[in-house]
Image 1 (cartoon, rainbow, N blue to C red):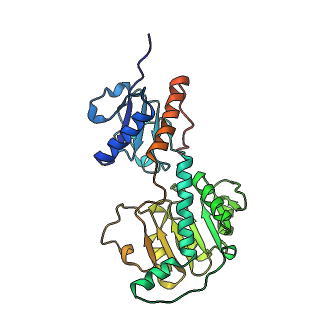
Image 2: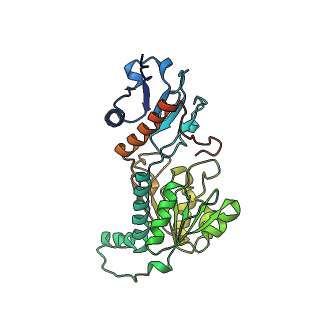
Image 3: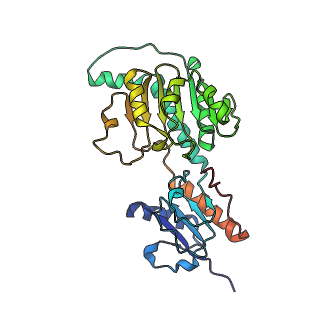
Length: 315
């Protein structure tokens, strides 16, 4: 007699329409599985796999049969803050399409700053017609903090465009045409001479506040900063001070500790800041659902969860 697969619990804090769209995409990717939510009144004692996207704190308690959790996001820092999280493996999303999307977003941001488009946008608001010299990319040094899947794809694309690229990561990673630094001893050298700094680090206790005064002071005078990592990577007061003194030229920010960014937040009106509404690398439902479906299919065959994150490292 064929065993009926246990239901898969989808837990999110997304709006109803977005959660419904994810549920539909997941069901389409694995038609042999039953995707349920807490609202369906499922027997929580049967759930072996949970799929999550910013689950509310405490929502993964009381799942005695839970074998593992699959995140629909690449970052898992928020879920790790939940003290009620069960001691089960957590698998984060590793999606080549997401890495490509991030590389495109990083390249767009770096080219925007390299070609002074933020300067021309400010001039337009003043109806000012003034041209500025265009520098070759070959003489422009770009630093990438974080050489994981997305960081390596971004650094490689920037190098292909001709930028002088160097990167830093916790452990050594090699990327063609990119000078790679690693570990605490490699952090300062990785910042030397950098004119555009891109942050793609995972958020961990060690990387929280990494974009601070001491980091900015190691960059080339007037350097630009792009934060596509997490809002908590940035010390806002230090950024504003560096912009106001001219130590930094401009900042492009896509992530914030509170999202949406409150309408009265001081960053909205700062002339040295470009704000994006967390759009650098949107997750594709279709490709993410396919990756999750493949992982669950392998689990059904073997009984083994996919490789999980290291909770101590935070990724």
